Image 1: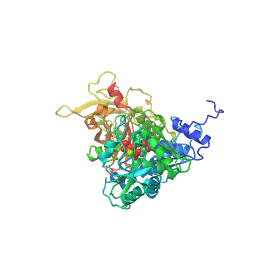
Image 2 (image 1 turned 90 degrees about the vertical axis):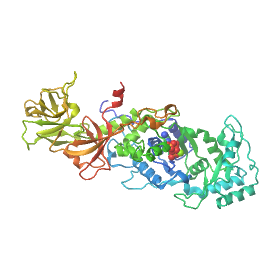
Image 3 (image 1 turned 180 degrees about the horizontal axis):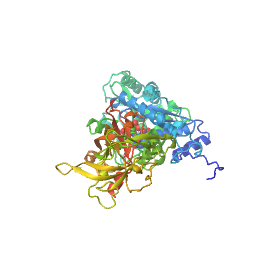
Image 4 (image 1 turned 135 degrees about the vertical axis):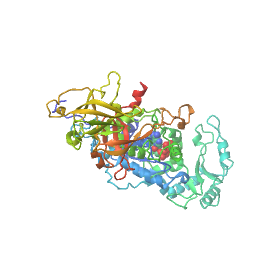
Length: 599
Ligand code: ATP
Ligand code: MG
């Protein structure tokens, strides 16, 4: 492209939901778009939620609208404040400001020439959101805050003859409902008078009855082919304390009743949920219509949920992994939770790029985990500082370097980022290399170190292996070699070529650290295929801790730093680190080791 041509503004993502939103704005049906992300606070958010967050917040902000983070907290039994807090933290992290976000970000619609982004991805929410500063709380919405209004709506339905109090037991209710191919039967309590219904409902609220004794049901159609329309339960009795409303309520609205009304109360225009709720949509519409609410009414749209290879996603299963101590908590770096991915070193930008790339459809499918891994690698490749670390050390004694002598070598910090500069490493008499980088009797095409052979130590010089030292059992314990200092940068033989270049760290200057090598949690792409128990296909090597030697500059690593340990992968400091005993997590290897292993 010639310099004089202004590149076209990159397109915002398009999909069928965004098309609907655009059409609704164009036709004047809505002046302003309001969406919501409504998690139930019964677990930590996972990467499937991230897809929904990016969609809902994305649509709102692309259109100058608003997206409400709403706790869908109508079922106190399974909910917890811990989850409310973690959800807020995760949403804020994913869409809000983050120290590292300045890299690879630009406003939607800005020209790529003015704001180059390495992989051309042009869709970044944080650029259009008011960036949350560190520690700033997003104020979420709570469905429980509408309990009074929702209760009023229920009484209004009773007054209209569209809801009744039913005394059937849960088992009877189930039996009366029928089946998709068999009509249901009217409840014997369906024709109670408005006065009796109102009285009983008020007494339900006044705690006169035990759990399960009575319900409030919509009066719709027990013969509807859609079982969700067969007089669904709107309210149930639950003598349970609620994390927001305490002991104020002993009747709680069901999801279907609370959800459409919460949307209505908040002025939501587009209520976007996953495909399972398609069959609930007629009920969503029925409730709003039956109450004769002011227009425009919110409308529900459904999209395919994210299913990702090599993991399980539902909160119930993730809770099982936590409770059975298969992982070390919700934020274990192997978990597909947002907090796990964060701890593993994945950036919000990488997750948003992933959400952008997978798109939004109406067809359920399995997303290849390689798509996520590519987004993570592309992001880290741009901004991770290059460092050297040896995970499985073998010592080399360079006999022509004196003890205590230090030979400075300049190392490039990030070839992808010319502004990142260089740092100085020191070659010393004793260095660590990877055990893998030496073989006594190597196969053909092995270009690393062998007896009598040469290899280049990255940023330093070519070395030769002169002597292999072994212990009584024949194990190689160390290598003695020669460092050809004339092959250093700027020296006469710097241009000398050898086929292999390996990384290394000075044995006298290195710091030691625990490095946790994480891998996929399951060995099978579909852990639950054909009804299999997902716990039968756990990857026994999903965590391998090693004691590694790191170049000394890594002693100053901070939590927000991202590193590429050269030739090994991307790493970040873990929260388990203590002064003097750092712990690093492997976010991801440099290449897809699984593809190689399977080919
Ligand atoms: P889970 O089945 O994992 O427990 P959920 O649907 O019960 O998830 P909610 O807290 O009710 O979790 O979900 C909040 C929002 O996130 C909903 O709008 C839901 O549709 C969406 N969501 C949940 N899982 C996914 C997923 N895998 N892909 C896309 N969106 C999802
Ligand atoms: Mg749910």
